[in-house]
Length: 546
Picture 1 (cartoon, one colour):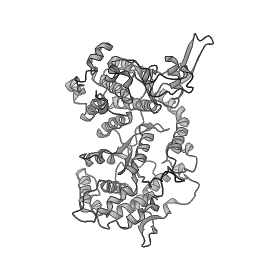
Picture 2 (spheres, rainbow, N blue to C red):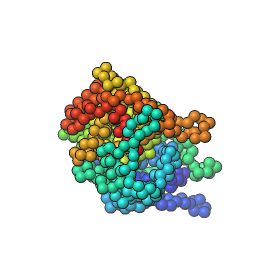
Picture 3 (cartoon, helix red, strand yellow):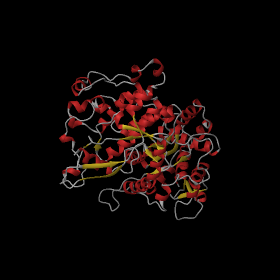
Picture 4 (cartoon, helix red, strand yellow):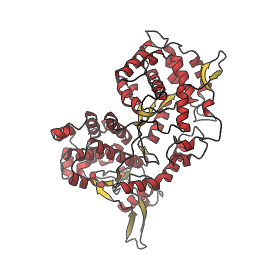
């Protein structure tokens, strides 16, 4: 049954580059011989790497962890928990084999991504052969300048910039920001000189041994065939490796969830970086008495290494590991995506990476779209081998969170910014009258920073940001409407009237906060930021979107 379980899972994960590849499986006619063929991985398990090469650095462990988060994400999307993540089940793959794997998976990944986007988003029809585009080097390559059947020069497309008295939108020539965005998508700016690309992984890691995997729900193709289905959590007893197993697996194995794999991964990272386990146990009984004891707190990884090693471990990294090893499941990372984003943030803070996209939203009407994009894109790998990491700007929506910290980490270190624009996002801007008594508006700050950075980039001054891609979100149709559950037309739902009544003055408190933010980080554009009116910022946003 364990072999059948592993074969079933692997056969459904053929396009996942960070899980061992399934080839074929079967059984003899007399049911006495069961077999499963998998790829031969030319590499070493990480427990052996630890023994032969010593502990890993923070940066290297993060790159390994991102691969594992991607692998676990694929399993969790199927409703499956691995239950035995540990160094011995993580293989380090040699460079040549990884390059070959990336090449062989390009077409599969491209077609799969297109199907996923068309099926799950379902809001826009993409013309042209998108699978062919995705399977190449990227949408910024010059040979893909014609992404639709239209041969018109998009740089000359009229764009809305103001509102007439009767409510009709008037048009003008594209702005400098829009021209740069359009140029980037048409070619000629495939990669601006000096701009950092999201790095390709030099070494890849693969997750193996799915024999103890368990489903939160039955994922078998035939529910009457016990050999084609996984055990569910209601059938569980303890399984896995005690030293890497979370507290809930000892207390009540039926309560394991996706965040149980998060614990095991965090324990593995702890071991590979510190050279010792967070809890030294050698049996299920010992683990049950130590790990499952909620009063025994998980040690800080920095307290378990030498002083020399401690100096190389950042506080942010230690906090990620600590949260991954929270004994209380509700306080632990609930998804590997969230853990991956925070781990990658450690690389960004070290200057060793940039985010692919910065997605922001204000109100609940945009939340679904923002999280859908995040789930579809975050910690995936493009056909060209570049990792996609998304910064979802939700922290500034939490009372007490420091907006500057999120902007400094995410917004200033992203290649593309994707603000979600809805009526609910625009309406609060009507309260800004361009006086000193205005409140500071964090969304307006975000938009001003985005546009200031884009204009600096258009002038050839170095910023990470390459493109601004607003997404317009109309209110959803009511249940029973012919177009339910799609969203409606933002412009037909009162947004032009909102734009018409926005202040033609800059809002001093918000503009000053943005200028101070930019100047304190040695970035240009502070004076221009002070002069941007509320209406100008929103009109520029619609100009770029058009």
